[in-house]
Amino acid sequence: MMSPRMRRRRRSDYKFEVEFDVRDAECDLQGVVNNAVYQHYFEHARHRYLLANGFDFMQLHQQGCDLVVTRAEIDYLGALRPGDRFVVCSTASRQSPLRFVFEQEIFRLPDDERVTRARFVGTGVIDGRPGLPQQLQVLLGDVGGGEPSSE
Image (cartoon, rainbow, N blue to C red; front, side, top):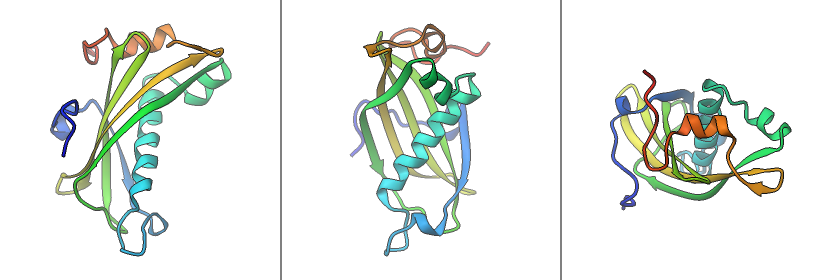
């Protein structure tokens, strides 16, 4: 059952998406993508989201800031199989002064069937202390305010 904190969205509600193809090695003996592989898809999409918004994950690390996931909620609604094309849609906001939230969903192509829904909560660690870089705070918007407008 979906967590009450995870909103049901349409694909068009997301500001960012990245397309993938299922590779054979990502599937288990049942012929479907292994549940743990979805975490890799979501993580790669979060990194691409940050990169598209001017934040290189590795560069942040080299500057002494590590972004870490502190909570992961995933609802598996369907299955992906070898050769399936799909998109991971992502949106990000601030939950608190020190916590951010990524809401993400996977939609199979071309029918846009919702396959998986997830919510990742994270924080930043700057030189060993909790914190988020100022530029990232700007990107994520006000606490509880959702994503800032791109206009």
